[in-house]
Length: 88
Image (cartoon, rainbow, N blue to C red; front, side, top):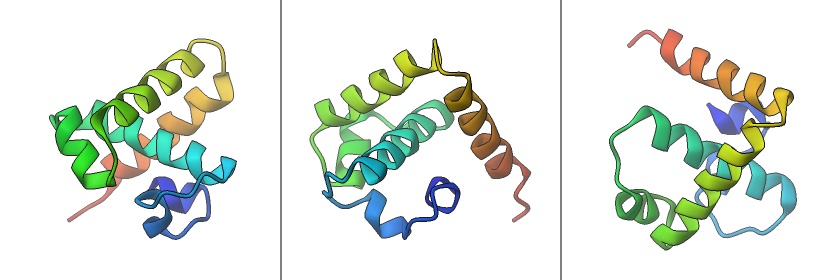
């Protein structure tokens, strides 16, 4: 869902690109996965192909951003709403 909001191929979120737009989307994705699941940081690291401390940094960076960036808060709220509204 995060990739869709950023108009990216979902595979890019699991890659190692350091392009700013992809890094931000990946960090948002990590934050959302962390906040909506019970996955541990090491499990998330394996999923994303990164060290768990990278995941931890990404989650913390978004948490910090949410304190002052209303647009980021609204974006994450929208992505979570879309995830929660899916019917399976």
